[in-house]
Length: 155
Image (cartoon, rainbow, N blue to C red; front, top):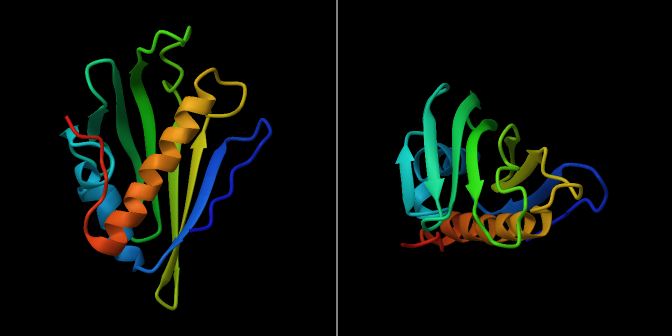
C-alpha cells in the first residue's frame, strides 16, 4: 500500500494502490459504505443528489450529499452537516462545507485511488484525528476490496 500525505496547508490527500478493478472500487464507494467505513449508515450514496449520514457512536456523525458520480472514475461528496463531539475539540463542526473527492484509475488489474478531502488541512483543529481516521478507513476499504471483508466502525 502506497500512502502519501501532504504536510503543509494543502488539503488532506492519500493515494493507495489495490489489486482490484475500478468498477469494484466505484461500487464500494456508491453501494457498500457500511462494509468498510461504518455500519451506522443511513440514506443512499448511489445517485447524484442522494444524502447519506455516517455515524461513529452517538457523538460523531457526518451528513454528505453526492455531488458527482463518474462511473468507475470519480465520486464527490459535499459535507452538509457534521459533529465531532470530542472534549478536546473546540470547533466540532469543521467538516461542514468540506468536499471529499475520490479519483479512481485502473491499469492492468492494479487500481489507484486518490482521496482528496478539500478543506481538511493542517490549519483545521481536527486534522490529526481526522487524517488518522482516514488512514484507518482507507486501509479498511483496501482490505474489503482485496478480501471481501473490511474493518468498518461497528456499533
